Every structure is written in C-alpha cells, then in structure tokens.
Amino acid sequence: MNKEIIKKHEKLKEKQRKEIKKIEKELIIAYALLFKEIKEIIRETEEKAGEWNYEELNKYNRLNKTIDEVNKKIDKNRNKEIALITGLLILGYKRSWEDSKELIKSNKEVPTLEKIKKNIADPWSGLSFSERIWDNQHKLKRKLKSNLIKRAVDKDNVNKVIKDIEKELNVSYNNAKRLINTEYTRVNYIAEIELFKEEGVTEVMYNATLDNSCSECSSMHGKVFRIETEPALPRHANCACFYTPVLP
Image 1 (cartoon, rainbow, N blue to C red):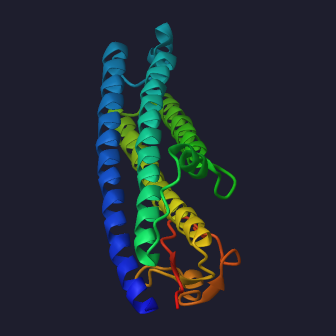
Image 2: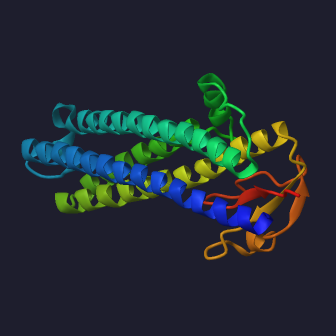
Image 3: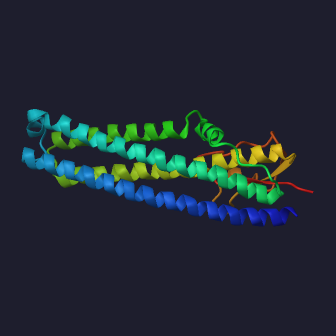
C-alpha cells in the first residue's frame, strides 16, 4: 500500500514541479526586462555625461539620479516577484492539500484563503519569504550602487558597467529561484502535515529526492516518524524532500 502511495505522490510532485517551472520562466522574463530598463538608463546617463567618468557623472547630480532611477526599477521588479511567488505558494498549498486528500481518501475541504496566506507568511529560518525578497533586492541595490561608483572612479568603459549589472541580476535571479524551490517545499510540508493530523494519520515516511539530495537528506530516506516528531521541511535551501503517509 505504501509503495503505491509513494508512486502516486511522486507523480503529483512532478505536476507541482511544472508549476514551479512556469513561475521561473516568468521571473526570467521579468529580470530580462529589468536588465533592459537599467541598461537604457545607464546608456542615457553616459550619453549626457560624455563618458562613464566620476567627475562628469557628478555634475548636475547625474550619478545619484541614475542610482535613484535604477532603484525604482528594482523596487518595481521586487513587487512583481512578491506577487508571482505569493500566487505560486497559495496554489502550491491548495494543490498539496488536494493531492494529499487523494492519497488518504479524505474529504476535508481546503482551508480558507486567509488561513493559507497566514501559513505561507510564517518565517522559515528566521525570515518570511517576502522578507527574503526584500533582503535580496536590498543587496542587489547596494551591489549595483557600489559597482556604478567604482567603475566611474576607475573611468571604465560603460560596457563593463553593463556587464557588472548583468552579472548581479543573474545572482539575484538565482537567489529568487532558490527561494521559490525552498518555500514551495515548506508550504507543501505545512499543508500535508496539517491534513494528515486532521485525518488521524499517525506516521509519515521521509522521502528524499535521491538524484540530487545531499548526504544529510539521503540518510533520512525511508525513515518513519510519528506525526509531530518528524523533522520539519525544508531542512535547507533548495530542499525538495517530502513526506508520505504510512497507512495500514
């Protein structure tokens, strides 16, 4: 019975991974647009100043104005990122609840949207997902500002400035991608365990995705825990482990 449940669960997880991929594609588009907009701001500033030179850029407060414009674009992207990930996590919670219902033959209704939003807003490892996005974007702003000033002081070619921006945006996108995978695992875990407890499931089995699991998670694969004694998920960033109910 439990082998059959694990097989079903893995198929359901595959559907969930497709949902994640959709959001990742939307984020790629959002970051590509952000890069295009920031690049245009930099090119326009360089054209007005004549070159990427601190002395020229400091005239008429050009450099500070440029940094302010760049920050506004980052803020706009941050808001979009929060909206995309919030929508994904709400969907993930609902889907995980419905999929778990199917596994244990439950008829429990999905919790209210208010309760789901409260659950997904809870912090993991000290910060909520939205706080992590704010933190990532703050780091991006600080790094871009530092690079823009340094390149101006060094009188570097503007193409180097743009290359720096592209590199930092790639870092920021990868941070967002890691956040999505980590938080999706968390809301899946919350929804599944909540339903299992309500339906009287007493034990769950730990399942590691063995093709890319760390040694710590792999060593837990197949272990059975009583509900409320199981290690909380995710156990680390990018963790994709999950629990399946142990049924008679």
